[in-house]
Image 1 (spheres, helix red, strand yellow):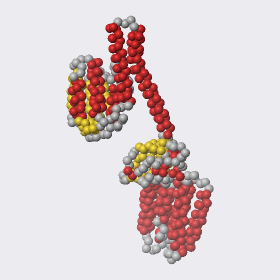
Image 2 (image 1 turned 135 degrees about the vertical axis):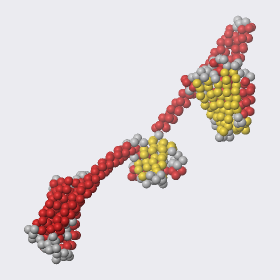
Image 3 (image 1 turned 45 degrees about the vertical axis):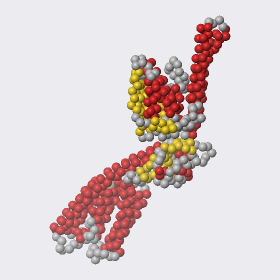
Length: 536
């Protein structure tokens, strides 16, 4: 679309205003014969009107051709000055009712052209108007005037009109300049706003995620290009639909109970898993105005996650099998060696007794490995009951304190704690954690301090076991709860794995933090009134 020159638009407005003025004002004077008795040349006024109409037609025809706006505007303004002076001449000169029209022309020149044009027009009009009144006063032109008018009347009329023209030129020029500056600033702002609007639209259209806007009732108002691709709907079809029609897992927008949701999209031959975030849009007054929804197709991501979990599961099974085989192979090798030696014979009674004791020891070791593994993989049935955890924990610590390594001190800060749990299985957790602390402090040497704290608040129980042992390295920290992982020379590496499993069965958890060389703190948490999962 071709952009219209602002000055040409003003010129068109000037031509239209001139035609309107001639029709309404001068036409009414002629049609109703107002003031004809006072005008020296009433017929000439009629001819002037015809001439102005003709000029208007000429101006309109000239606009169809390519004309330079500014010279064309000057041409019209100067002709208007002469036309008004002619009207003043025909209607009595100093006694004319139409001298105010010069002011209108000055205003028009400042508005249509610029500030300088207003002063040029005022100067031309002042000179010509003053000259005409001087010629009238000296009766050098055939325009009569009343005998009551004297030289001072002519001088005052000329002076007042010249002052009015220049004041009007100044005010119009100032207004025109301010308006032009404002117009330029506004046009720049509009251009910047248009560019920003286009830029924002391009950003929204090229987002990799779908974007949807809705009104306060959940009716869809807009949908971007990615949203069309994900939903399979064009924006015209989507407009007016409810968001639940596309994403049925969105139950109630008004509750605002979610910021993030995930579920399957309605319809379509292929099921799509959609993840979305919905935010509320508020007006400038802070009132709810609608919602904005950003969503993505998570189908492929979910598929990859499931495949990854399956691979991790098989990898864990493979690692677990390898660890079991390793743990069983060692005592089996010892058993085989002992049996072979007994089978060959030639051993002394003392050696036979030693070999038999080794067989029994390795058999016990195999039994312990199998028992621990079964306890981990198939936990014992959970028998829950109200438990005084304070008494249970203190009793366990009192029992274990008798077998504490030399130099190890146990410090307790245990408050009243009660929960619904299996006391035997919880005692096993406490037993494993305390023994691990003893072994860590023994490995470091020179004794140590085990601080056990327990408290119950906000419906949850938390028990902490903090020791001053050798700590856990960053590398080992990621494997602490892995089955068969151990840094000790003896043991199956299932103690912490079993403890974590027990706590998970009780709806609780075990966390730890450690600093190598300075100690480790294990935190056991469980709900005070939680229901344990029953396994049998």
